[in-house]
Amino acid sequence: MPGQPAQQPAQPRRIVVTGTTGSGKTTLARAVAGKLGVPHAEQDAWSHLPDWQEAPVEQFRAAVDAFTVQTAWVMDGNYTKANDIGWARADTLIWLDYAAPLVFWRLLRRTLRRGLTREELWNGNREQLGLNLLSRDGILAWFFRTHWRHRREKAGKLAAYPHLQVLRFQTPTEAERWLKSLQTTK
Image (cartoon, rainbow, N blue to C red; front, side):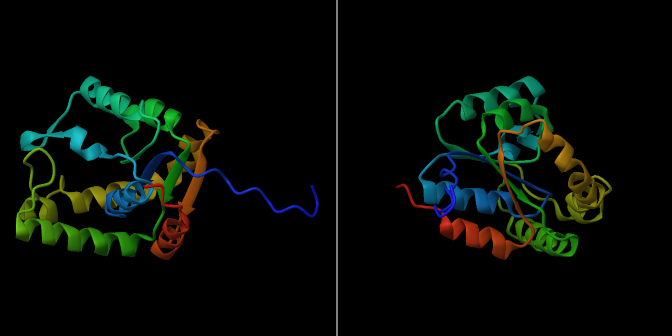
């Protein structure tokens, strides 16, 4: 009705954070989960078994299913093989749609740091600098193969989930501003 303030959207409770490789999905998802006091899961941990072996699709989908039956959660990742589970159960999708140069430099710095420190990622796996920096199968090559494609295809994929509140952030400042606006529920 005229003269009444617009109703604020409900506080999100089941959130998927997506974006191209290196955009900061996990960092933001952890921060959101921490602020809301809800569980966080990283799809990479379900997908990458020891020695960088890919998990069977059924195993991956079962992990997404088990996690997303909870009443509140934050999950990050770009894996389409379980969107029909995770996206269908989510109420909010955060799309980190940052410019390619920003994402590339973030990804390069992260890859170098992880490789030099031998940081464990998932299931005992660690970055391999030679592979990730120089290989056609490495993370940097993956970025160049997928960044623009993901951007082109995202709207079509989202159309299949009209119930989702989509928050598309095109700069880290936009994402940080939104994060600060969340009400802490701890």
